[in-house]
Length: 119
Image 1 (cartoon, one colour):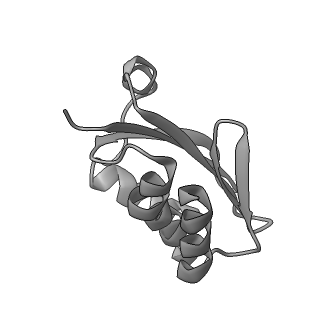
Image 2 (cartoon, one colour):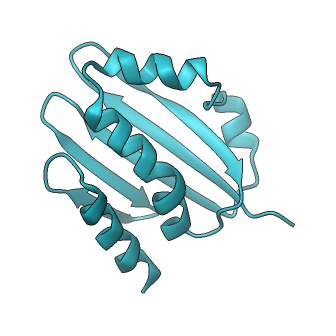
């Protein structure tokens, strides 16, 4: 049986304030979700010239799911990303644990957080 994850992506900026959801299989721990799914989204948001560019890319590739499907998913792990684009604040969370990045996240800082989650 495949392990299912649910990831909520919250984005705040001057242009957009909202959230969307990702649901998928293959990752059953917060570290796996961060390493294989959330890191990609954090880096894509950080590297987008405008938040709209990132959001349109997500929609274009059909990566997101609706809130109803997200809520109905019996996931093995639920995580979230919170990004405040205007103030360059990025965080990854699972349950009551929050891992904030110091400014724009880097691959090495994300890898360090993955290591923390694995221990």
